[in-house]
Length: 292
Image (tube, rainbow, N blue to C red):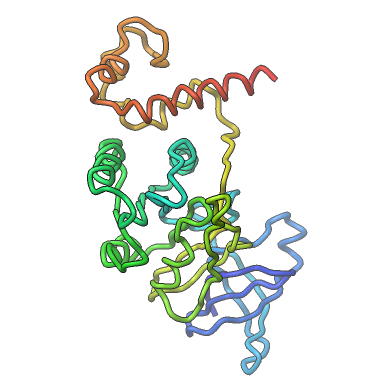
């Protein structure tokens, strides 16, 4: 039988089979021998050992079309990045880091601006314009009030989507609303720190409809870009691309070079200063890291 690994705990891999049932499976020793560890999200073949207790052996892992290290998950079609407009306030440097990570892995990202009921409509519109201008799809929503859910369902349909974002922004609450069988544990925002408690402790795939899966991940508060040189960074700011051919120097890094078309676009407010400041900060961080 074929299926998808939806959870891995203590050496068992829980496989959502094509019959709609979930089987607890052990992996064949050959995977350990070949140093090929099954991942949540893997499409697999299993042998059913016990129909009643839903137990089996994992005997084959089909080729992966993508894989992420953090979170450790395979065959992701897209990332759905949830940030709150308020409570906690959005950390745009963190958002941009995540978008860069997904861009490096070749995984498209959709941005959900949650808790729009707590923010001014003008601010929601401003942020939507900034990120849509960079080529990202942006969905304003209020999970609490049920607003934006249909557009979210449409964006997720037929895909395996990793749901990510800082703790406390409403990821697990959103997952709960989109499906009924698996209720992820949700937590309240800490009043003192205005930060979310880490309520999701491991990556888990949640089937929400035929062919539609969500990967709920532990909330993150910090991301460090690795395996990237500072000169690569500009390639992951898609809004730069349309101007780069007009820069005087080939390979312009858009920082101190003269006749830089990106900086000229910034001066005309065609490129967001919010994003450009994040670019400078990340560039400096990568350059400093290389020194050590």
